[in-house]
Image 1 (cartoon, rainbow, N blue to C red):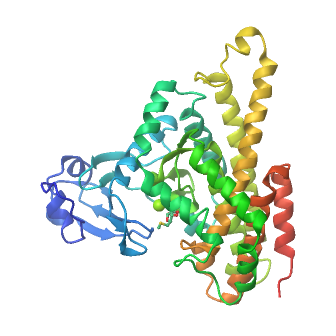
Image 2 (image 1 turned 120 degrees about the vertical axis):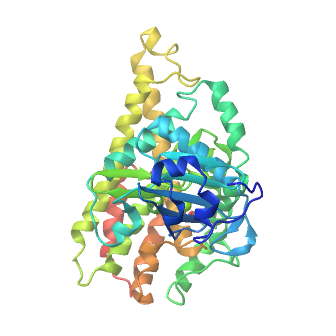
Image 3 (image 1 turned 90 degrees about the vertical axis):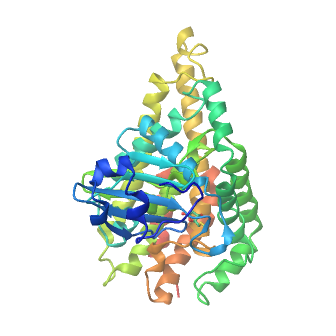
Length: 423
Ligand code: SR1
Ligand code: MG
């Protein structure tokens, strides 16, 4: 690519503009005139091209200088592509094989050339179809434990971690999106908010008048903005995971930032719980998706159990950072002290993660960025029933997170809400 000034790619211009790119040619073949290009971006922000040549296929992802979902009136820095690239390289080191391989990065063009994943599909789409993926609970539990532990002061040399905090602190525009869209806008009449109306009007008004909810949502925002604990993916929902029956990959870490360990885990679990409540809107006959619902709760249990087991393993084998040093515990023969500290750390993560899950659920139904799980339920009455149950769960998790003893209690609440009749 010769132009140093940013220029958005298109299906028509891509072969000519990237025809000289060695990394891409090596992967897909030299004959750029024969490359087949299609644009498949269905996210809120970027262009995503599949480029197929005679030797292979690759993905070209390019940031746009504005929010694609809204338009040019909402400018957004191209530098998010730089943060995505740097997050991908760190995640590839911390949990090898779990993110797409990066072939090339161009900062000026805000463009990443990366591995084409096939026969993978977006996890959210698979769950909407009622497809059960056998590996995701374990794979995502390992991914979150490894990336979040290894990116924190539990493991990293503290000067490296502090330098990385400084590097990622410039991803403020993307944090600002989360700070507004997740933690504040859902609780006021923000101009771009929408909800299923008039069916949910009453409940939405009630939630916006709910003082306890507003206070707790702000406490979650406080944690998000102040607890620079580890390098988070930053947007770990089911649209950021690609799956096949025997492989799981995490994509799109452009929202990467230093934040609480609990943030990614909470966002992820929230998306399984929303999928659970959306299933009733996708079944032809009541109860048809009972086994899918059981699978989703089982997947949440598997993510959390795997996360805890792997985090505990890393606690014992890779706790080389400035926190809870072995010199204070194991090296003085105090193994029980190290275990006690681990229990406290996991306990904090557990309660925080429930709060982050709660606000994620609420914002996907009350705010700007909805999810396809609910949006693809065409009948608004049916959709509203599913959404209102999810809203009640979101409120419960956000407000009561510190008193919820464990996931069994959450799943009891979810099953009760599912059985509840809503007129
Ligand atoms: C304006 S961006 C809206 C949402 O899309 C991204 O995937 C993030 O979840 C963000 O909140
Ligand atoms: Mg994304």
